[in-house]
Image (cartoon, rainbow over all chains, first blue to last red):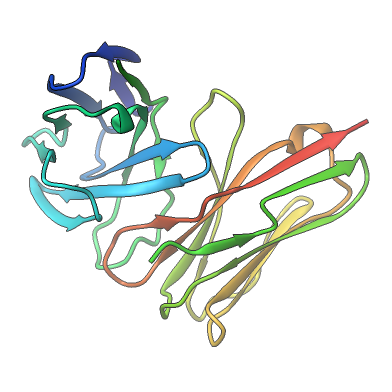
Length: 116
Length: 109
């Protein structure tokens, strides 16, 4: 089956602009999580969506938002971009019917965002 | 809530063993291990669940000490293909994984 698809793969934006990233999970997966990856910081959790509802949110400013559609596809939006937002943004999908994450997460290739 | 991984980096010769540690300040439901090669997405290695047994996967295995909120990943007889950054992800019952900053493993001939 097809893996997790993230688009676009690369983006260059200017400070102050906004950006929308897209993630299509594996068919049948209803949970989508977003992570920011920067050198030295590892994978920083942004938020997790399940059945169109945001269940969890990491410690990021309100400029970072997301949503999930009825087909489980998810989008992440960053407004008023700052230089420090330059990073690889990864989404991961999993099949998590319960209250704990007891199955593996499948990661997409990520979107490399550069803010200039 | 981010777990702490150690060491940050390790260099091994082929055939040598390594241990990567992961510890959390929170009670954990599960610990996940992933490996990421340069320019690629993280790939799942294994999950250790609360109350579960030590997991194994060829020459890579892991343990989970629930009382200490710690997990260790054991790589034995390392191969060149083991090179990459290893991340542990911890889950404290809220359905979101918090990952450590990673351990960069380099295996040289």
